Length: 294
Image 1 (tube, one colour):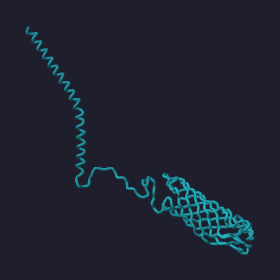
Image 2: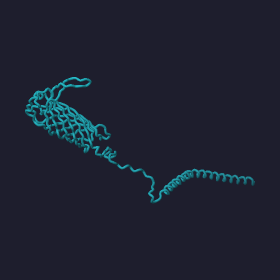
Image 3: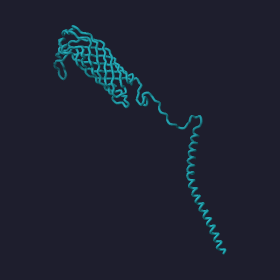
Image 4: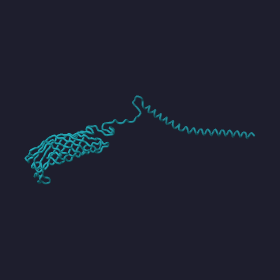
């Protein structure tokens, strides 16, 4: 009877011990899982603290040392992008200089002097651009027109022409300076020299690869005058290039009214070639130009 009782107590104790062992294993596994992130985080914090400590040790108070900072943006300078809404501006005096070249034809007006007809002309100029809207140009212009047949006949010649050259100061106002296409007004005045010449075919010797004789039109007489004059007109211009519409190069087409204040000619016989009855005062023509400015 004692043996079964002993066996019962032994089995009960073994079951209790097994339950305790199983609980211990489960608790150990759970503890291991929760301890891994903590153990991995501790070295990171330690490393960060160590790096901060090294930086703090290198930067001693009062020696001007500091942690590196982002570079400051370069100061804006004249002649660079980033000013005035991203447009490029060069403030040097050379950037204000402007030049032009053009040519075209000229037509007489209804009240032009009878000594001038249709012809050709060209224009050269340079000046100063005070701002995108306003410029002042010093212009040289040369006008070549054929003299009318009636005037040539009165002079007793077989041909003739009228040359006018000038130096003038001409302000110009661009009405839409920041647009690719714009219109402008221009006008001014200055010095004009007018020369009316008469020609006849003349036997002339010429030599190239060999020498020979031929007829060329040579000036046989002329009269001239120096005087003031003025002009006024308008034009259309189109900018070439420019990322922000600020190109200084443009092509243009313009028309002006030109009045040369030449004196009246009456009863003049140029070098004995004949009698010129009357050439009224003032020479008025309309020059039409096509060209480029930059």
